[in-house]
Length: 201
Image (cartoon, rainbow, N blue to C red; front, side, top):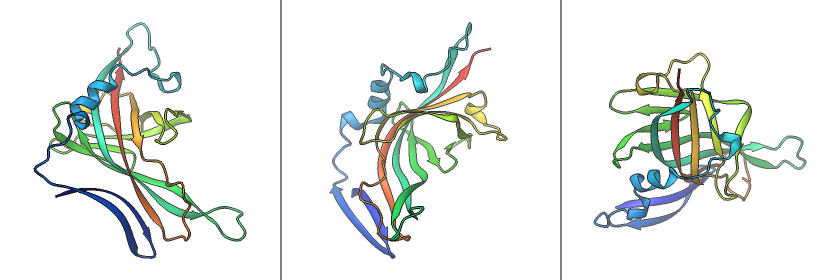
């Protein structure tokens, strides 16, 4: 059996709405990573997160992965609130990475970090200052342009990466209903495409 669930935890109690599916039902063709990666290729990239031209040589794509997982949030007291009120703050992503053959090849986690399972290739990113973001869907997390984190050394396939783009996002936004206490957490399902690119010498 497989399940898709939205989890919200409060005072140690798990509340979940779960949809169950039999394992003899294949994943719908439209939801396969290869299909979603292909569909993302002709998307118009907003100027705010587009790659710089880096003329005359331009840029080159190093890798493209599909991510499926959750965006994790926790409750935090809202500054200056009286009586005390709480708001959601982002904690970290937690997702599996898939390539264009539908193979699960790694994970995406706090950092933000991307790690390939077989080779251990690792990439850690950070936001530009100011952050480069674009909102394409009010119900989904923003598209982003990131860069390698200062002081880190990307390894393996990521060694020459200069830019990371998060595009084609679905879901992942913090719950619309605010938390009612400081112990609440929420795991919100999301998918996205991550593009890793380098500037040509």
